Image (tube, rainbow, N blue to C red):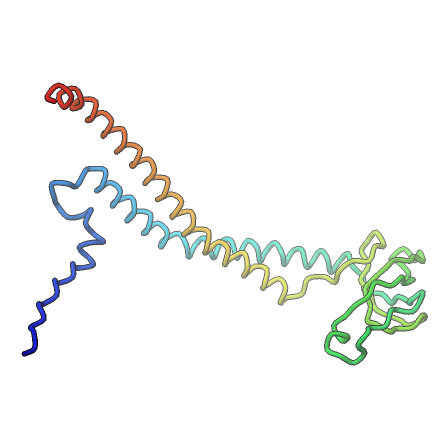
Length: 206
């Protein structure tokens, strides 16, 4: 004869466990309710602050990098440069790695003041001396990177916006952790005070 399986104990309702600080019970302390209000306040603050913070930071970064791109476009010049010597050959010519590889080679070019200069720049492998490559030169005649393009400006601004969107919840979590630590210290101080009051009677009764 099959044995009857006793019914399992009904699981405690999850919302009641998560929201125990909001329910009236003799063990709840005022600091427990305060901690619940702090958590709710910070949660709402994070929800309210994340969108505007993301927009403001992203917009500020976009304006900054757009102005940087304009300044770079006005002060940097694309000019031809001639290789002074051969570029190294890649050990695997024709491979995908070779197509992406660059080697530093000395080149000769004319700066914006019409002075002939030499400097090193990265070029594709196996280029021979006398080959011409394009380089960007700044107002001081130094080889530099190309000005930021529209995609780079947008990408950097988006990166800062994402960082801002992540930073707001992190700050909210840090604020809650700080409040929780202060409340725990308050609890410990209360326990010490209560024990100091009860300990003499406890010791005398033994």
